[in-house]
Amino acid sequence: MKKSYIAWFVGQITMLVLFSLSILAMYFVEFFRSTQYELLYLRINGGVFWASALLLILASIVVCILRKRDTDFEKEHPKHRPGCIRVFQNTPAKVADIATAITGLTAIILFILDMKILIPRGIQVVVFISISLFILSFGMHCILNGINFEYLVSNKGGEKK
Picture 1: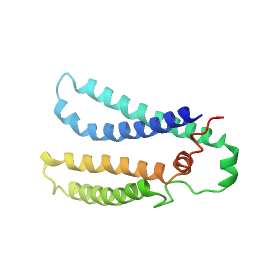
Picture 2: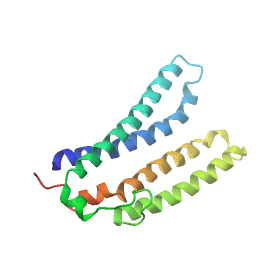
Picture 3: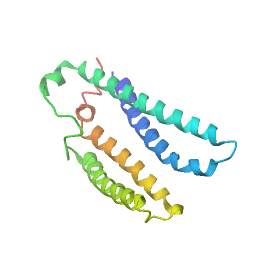
């Protein structure tokens, strides 16, 4: 069970990274505007966006199912809050929590400035970078504070049955 659990857990994080990168890639559609590649770029980026979103959900479900198969761990942790509500559960989660707060505030401030036309057109990529980083850091906050990560580091995710 160890290899499959770790593989799905890593897949979950990989899909989160692809998802946030596809949001960042939305900015670059401007470079293909009115060219023969505009539609191709939009289709590829849209495909990556939706595929990574659906595969992220699938990986999250599979990771939960694999964890719930360990009845001993479930008995030790009968009730647990979702990872998006928990904060500062471990050292990697602390980093993700702080990054989420910083990137969230940055994204909000830059988005408001962008709406008021205070950000020049040439550096709007900064807004997309901040939104993409916020989505990535919030996803990592949810994953690293969650029970599935706790199961992985408790070494029970590594036991063979």
